[in-house]
Image (cartoon, rainbow over all chains, first blue to last red; front, side):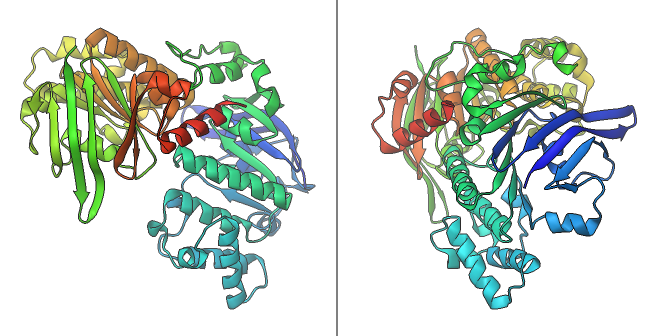
Length: 275
Length: 248
């Protein structure tokens, strides 16, 4: 499994003309943990979603190459895309409150995913769902399987989402801000869980977030996006040696516990970054 | 220095559930007190009881030496203002910035709205042109500045900040935190800030109260927290996590 994106642009027509959301982004992602970092509107989510062709209808997408494991995502028909979405690549979104069905139990939703992607029967799907809940480290999987989303905490809901995405044994997980709706402690637990699952199953992970230190903590490589472009791509271990002004700015404007700062650095946005 | 806020043995119940119990802390005038904890630890419950949004509580609370009852006099709401997490949710979508800033003045019968609105916008570093825009025409950081400006309109002594930067990008967070520090210095404001981000709380506040399961398990100065001189296991746990994520 590898993803190849070359010179991707995504435009949206607006009343004032075309708005360029992604401008010439290229990246190659293999079986690794890859982070995409940027602020709201930087194009990070659109870039990741383009891999699954999950963009709004109004989006105008162009690319020299956009492939998932050799499959041309730009030209594939819907049935070929359905074979990728969910089955070979799962998408975990930010807030389980909005992405879980409120009128189905957690177990029923995971069973649905199992049955949509495998030939499992009802009973087998039920057993698989409970096993998946156990794999995402839910202590009492049978009770959680019978619970409705409103009865679960945010962290628990996100575990259910992850369990559902794991059902068809995907090769790639795209996690779009999977923990921004969660507490710091739960956030770390969920990311560690993702980290373990991805390593033990040999999956690829694309982690999208606005939190640069967090992403670099869990990923091998990080692409930093600004205003629709990748301004810097670096190994997570080399973060301290980041060169681009924007990446440095992101790191320097954070309050830290280890070091007291009288005033926080404010990012001075260089117009040249937009070029 | 005089004590601006005193909370003594505060308890809040929702039916049979004790959301907060035995919470006590005091904040000097012009100081900042941070409350950290996980979701459900009761940190927002304490802030809401203090602000008067929840009238059902037990214990004692004082602002500037005056005991607070369940129902507050109008002057309380002039002196104590609140800033919420999501500025998009706390600004009226069909009211201009001008309208949002005028309302506290009308409510409290404060005269001369014109110069006050212009001054408030300047104080939070917003261009005067923003005045007649609607919230959707502003960026997230600008919206939070409007929310801070609105809180300042009634010339309060105390600002209650409920996760004021957690919905913002980190670069915007830095701007809003700097703004809050400047305003505090200029106006000698007293802050109580609730957040789950330990680094943000330690940055703005000199003292931090750590909440777990409805109780304030430890009160520690930010300097001690940074140096690792915290005694409660939950404080240590939160600190260790925050430190770990700071290292790449």
